[in-house]
Image 1 (cartoon, each protein chain N blue to C red):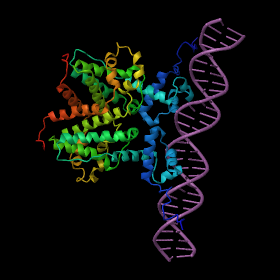
Image 2: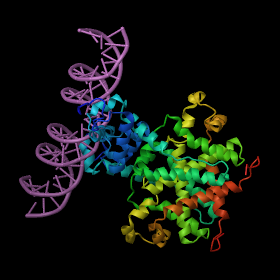
Image 3: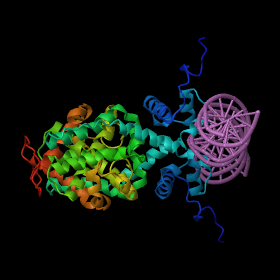
Length: 226
Length: 226
DNA sequence: ACGTCTTACGTACATCGTACGTGTCGCGCC
DNA sequence: GGCGCGACACGTACGATGTACGTAAGACGT
């Protein structure tokens, strides 16, 4: 009567699939960090033997590419071409900020792995379209895209703490400032409060504004669309 | 007569030291990539047993921090305060480009590891000093520093190919463009030539110019020093 | 001569990625 | 029905890795 195991979903095992594996990996990374990711942990996560994963993923590298792909797919790239290009450009860069915020601990993996899908081309296409709409010529458009990418990239790595090298250490080592000789680092010491206070939102918008207004002031060959 | 082994350096074993270990690690990474780095490989590199390393380095993580520190120490931060701040700012950001170019395969490690030395504060101090010289107030100076850092960071990750995700895949997959439907990625297809051609220098300077000129146009409370 | 400290070494173990062989299940074909 | 066959989950096993731990050999003050 009730024991029809084959047709009625038994629930505990919703079939193993590449998508489920990738999702488990993403979850694991976000919960315990990228170092904690291992094929064995992922398998355990899914209640499955280790080698079963290899039926859907050729190797760990491919899994990581899957993770990168998954995250990039989360980019929300809705666009309204009737808006001025400045607004659309801001929206594009903000979309990066959004995913970086949603998957902070995945970022290292996302950035250091290739993405074979055309998904990875969407941001580039969008940026080029914007520059085109703004009236810039081809070579300039490419450079604009690269500059925007660079900023979006760096700002997010900074904000999410992926990059611990530069100014971030200023923020995380507040207690050791006392030992800093003000002679060698006068400005850092003087601005320690501002450095410690975090307002990533306005920090991000500040830099974005710089770029957009600079682009706006740039001479261009063709007339802009709006 | 000639066999005084203790005083005259026997050459093959110049004493094991943390600096030598770090240097070996850096060399190995640059030659074979970060994945190839293992304590055993480093030990072999130095003609030494594996565990001997642990007399100078508590664990692998500390070694990586040492690598990061070594690279950051290579930042050439000479400065001429008599120059206009724009020039000095350009020099600062270019210094990042220089090290990233010198140690491309170390960058991932450099960025994802903390640096405990005050060495890591030098760039921040310099950037803050520049913003101060330009006449910006404290909070704005901090934001300027962060924006410059973000760009320097992102631009270098892009250029050195550490980040393979965004537009870089456009450049590395030239052969597969034929299969791109021009309907979905019209601009990418149209600008494929510009995308493929590499002129990192001017790309970099383009973005840097955007930021500097935007900063220059910014209103500021105090008068600039020059 | 002798303890102590420093440093290089070797062994041992847990954990990792994954190559390979085995078992089970469902489905088309006779 | 029987039967072969491909897909998929599993278990075992091997090499490589990071490192805890014990050992030994020289340096040096007493």
